[in-house]
Image (cartoon, rainbow, N blue to C red; front, side, top):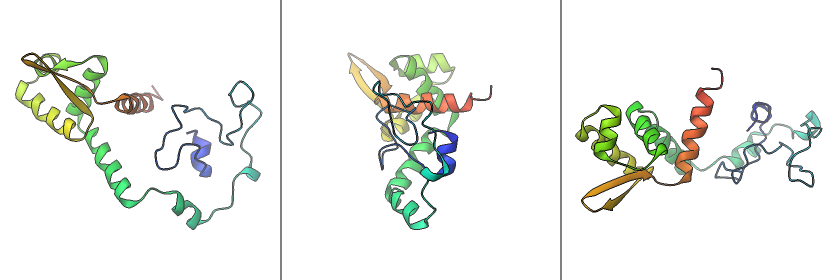
Length: 156
């Protein structure tokens, strides 16, 4: 979502999901030309923004359980070790020992963090013979990592 859209309270994503079907560059007004892209002249004007109403904003907020779940999800990314493990798994599926080797950590410490990440449904495990290969649970996890990295590297 563009900075001016956030400031004006305009949200173009799907209600409750925060996703716009992968299109993070939709125009605020939602208008698109025949190619499916928003014309550059279709800027948001003051007239397009409805007047402020606490009730209208409140009606668009997710329920408390959803907000709590979202906060718990973001806690998983708040630990640097878990973020590093997720970064490794963005590159490719790896076994515990391989992750431990890459990060210079003990197998026990990596296993502990993987257990937490599996519990949060960020990582999945697949048994391959005697070993278990870990990977990101789905594309959403990769998208969260990519968006987070883009955000922290914006001003670099």
